[in-house]
Image 1 (cartoon, rainbow, N blue to C red):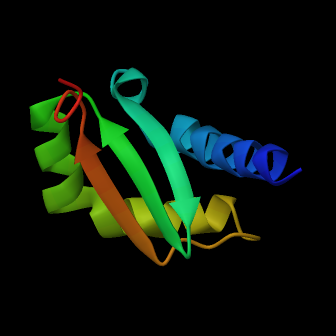
Image 2 (cartoon, rainbow, N blue to C red):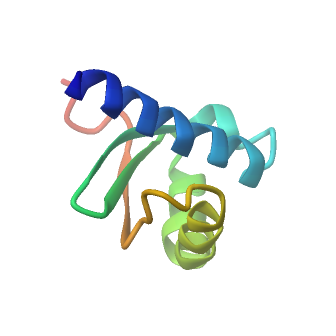
Length: 86
């Protein structure tokens, strides 16, 4: 049951990202998880990682919260994909 709720929650955030991010950026971002108000996204592109962490973090957090009102994000965390998978 908890796993089903987690997957549903991740799906809601993924759907929000589908609506927020341009189509060219969306395949490079994946929702890893949501816990204690912190949403973690993995970004597969270093330039996109720099853009999202440096310039768009707060905008994304606010827009996600507008779309997923029942589970608000207090903190948005990014991880660069391909680091630590070796």
